[in-house]
Image 1 (cartoon, one colour):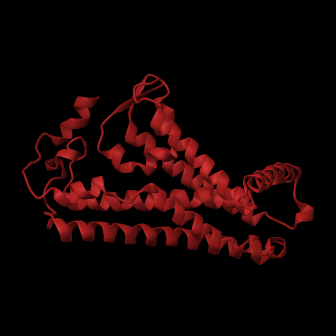
Image 2 (cartoon, rainbow, N blue to C red):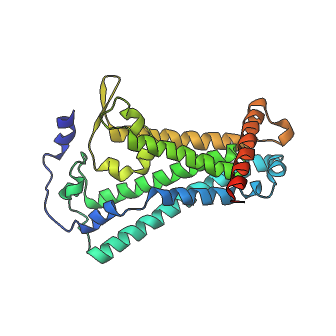
Length: 275
């Protein structure tokens, strides 16, 4: 399979050039934690009615469940696209300004750090790929946070839940060896998508049901499925959310658990002297 994947590169023209801006982009790219912080802030502002206790009043109306949910989806989507686009423009602008210009038509396999890419592409095409990956990861993070904040209405618990989910995901990605039989959990993982540059620069196949699959495909499909699923569930929660008295048994059970965790959280912070 490896030979077949690299056969596409047999006739490309590899030549040396100014690799410094690309190397800087790979080494000092935007840290994933920055995107997560932006997602939390954006979602928190979008769901501001939770802070003021207006959620039951808003979701008791038809427009509050329908049009408002659609507007929120659009705001979160385009906000994520704009944020990721601005960060990309700032990063590549600083790299080319400080380290010299790029040669857009040079093959990206000419850069030693990217020789493992199995798809022949120019530096211009690689930059478009980088931008698309950055936007996709930011949208995924925003929708994951949106779902968390939609299910966990208590603000502090929503933040803690988000940190816990991302922390467990990142721990699995960092701890599980690439050669382990659990490697699927390492790459079928949102943390792998957050480290998309690390995935693009390393070629590796995974054995899934006796079939070799290139790991980047696993990362891509996982990110797409997670993004679509989180958005769909969050929209469903928004469209079907009614006043408190009409919540179903499952929702009331989850809220009971969240309330118990919130009481313990406040007791712990009071004991430690944080409040």
